[in-house]
Image 1 (cartoon, rainbow, N blue to C red):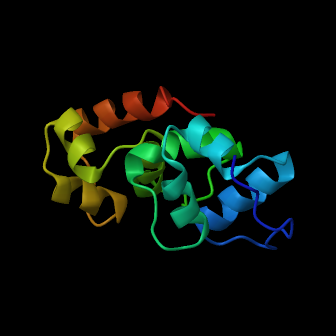
Image 2: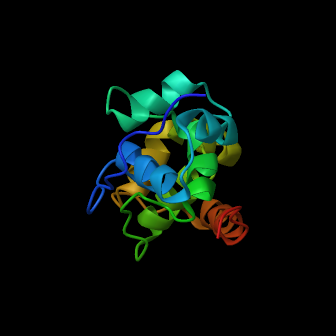
Length: 136
């Protein structure tokens, strides 16, 4: 079993890796144990913690569950923010969410940036999806 990193937590973590490392250290877990919980290889977790790479979006739901909170700073006071938050918490790319809603990924991008507003039918679909959030 691999050894945990030093026990020094990072104050005000900014990256996914820093959030993961702090949580792992708080729980006194080895990287191999957390990697198993997240269903990734230990090298992936090590890379995330050492800022060599970042997790793919489909890993986000398990990461959020492990952390117990969403580490992404998303303004959810706007519809665009709520759309992005839903997408991240469910591990969906803009393309994947677009397929669910029968729109292209650039439409999802513009909704998230609040530069376009979904029309009535798409808005209703979005509202239903967002209300059924899988996390929280």
